[in-house]
Structure formats: C-alpha cells, structure tokens
Length: 240
Image 1 (spheres, rainbow, N blue to C red):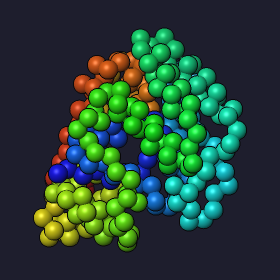
Image 2: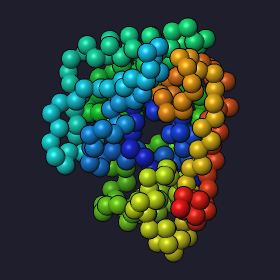
Image 3: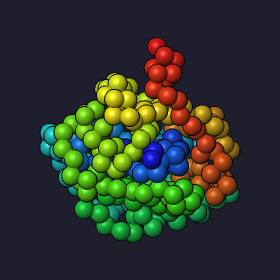
Image 4: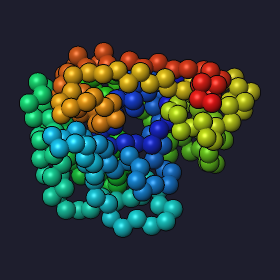
C-alpha cells in the first residue's frame, strides 16, 4: 500500500499530481501550521510578461494557526481576478476552456477554510486526468493520530496500513528513515522528471499550476504525469 501525505496546494503543479498517480492512499495533511509564503494559497502562472503568482487572500493569520483554521477573505472579487489571470495566461492554448471551467467549478463553491479550497482544487485536477480512480483520499483528522514531525508521519502510514511512504524532497530534512525501516515501511522520494510539454509564453517551466498542463494538452496531458521514485538511500546519496 503506497501512501502519500501532503499539505494541500492551490491548483498544484504537476509534481503533486504525480504523487497522486503513485498513491494508493493520499492523506490531506492540513491540520499542521500554516506557513506564509507556502504554496497552500498561491501558485505560479506563466503570463505574457513573465511568471506571476495567483494568490487567494486570507483573513488575518495568527501565529500557530493551522491550515484548516485559516479562513479566506469573504470578498468574491479575487475569484474574478483569478479567472481573468487564467484567461490571460492560458488564452490561445488548445484546451484553455477546459482549464477555465475547472477553475470556475471549484470557485463556484464556498469553503470554510483555505485547506478545503485547495483540496477541492487538487481533486478537480486529479479527476480531469483520471488519476483519482485508484487513489483513496483521506483527511488526516479522520485518522485521529497525534504527535508531530517524523513520528506522526510514520504513525499515519501505519494507521492506513501502508508499507511504502512516498514523499517530496523536503522530507529529507526531518524524516527518520531507519525508524520507518524498523517498522517494515519503505521510504521512497519523488524522482521528478520535469518532463517538458508544449507551453505558451517562452521557455518551459514545470513549476506552474497543473491548469497549464490541462490548457495545453487536455486529458492527453496524463502522459506528462510520469515521474517515478527513488529509494531513500539512493536519493540521499545523490543529493549529497
């Protein structure tokens, strides 16, 4: 059972979609502290004038506030601004209307906190590419697992009966790999291929919203959601 545990991201980049594709269980990890400047409430778009952030405005954030406690500014104007940005970014791409429709459908709903909105945006992209079918999505709060850092991640994987934990590169800073091995759980890191696809507005970058892949490739874009993983020892050795 392959498990991915991740904080939510707004209409995330292809790399997170690749984690969804690889996961049997994807755990939304949104009861952890919100970090300003993270990708929870913002994502990059390619514009004719260069890269630009598309950001969901938030109510005043208190120190230590969790992602699933951070509320969105009630004004609806930001949604219109986002849709205008997307139309400028993606206009002219062959499947731009698909991407705009995904955003419109997500934004048509109201959400109790930023985590709920970003979860919805991820699921909308996953459904579009059909990578949600074999993945079970779970909110970490439903698992009732306490603790923090590496210990809590390990306990979450155990709770869903996983035998492989797949993670992005940031986990290398805190994960106790031997502890996972002692629990008969294999740790694998993403080996991002960053595969180029047809893209507007200059040189290719993989770090923009997955809506960009939708707009330029349609559902055939699934062939670019293709990264695999590396065992943790190989990843650590290659990173040093």
